[in-house]
Image 1: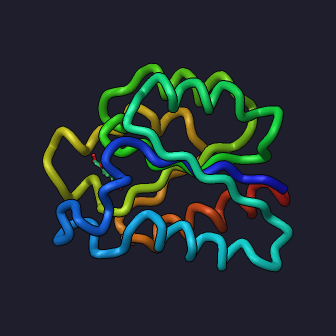
Image 2: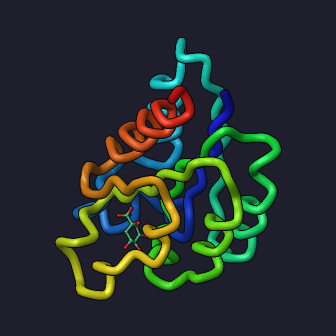
Length: 144
Ligand code: DQA
């Protein structure tokens, strides 16, 4: 099985960005941990990061042919992007939304996820471990 991991805007800056909230691990560190988790589970992972909404919409739209599931951290687009939500609603493979921080514990504008109603489920608040939980959830859904 193949899973696509999508990271939205500013997540390329993990490790240097608001470390009190997101910690010191870089996106590369997280990628490595996800690959370790996938090892031995017959899962191939692909990683995509973009700061551009349209690029994220494009890759979601093309994902169905190649992948069995998506794990996505839409980052700030979580709270603004009808286009990403519609892209997720347009495909038939399962999508799991992850957030490092607990978005419900932060500023009010982060409490609403525009994308959440279009995904299977959301994991929020476990730092880099949110990605591992999201990956395991996606694998579990595919196997069902
Ligand atoms: C985030 C939470 C978002 O509110 C924020 O804009 C991000 C990261 C998280 O992983 O906690 O960029 O998605």
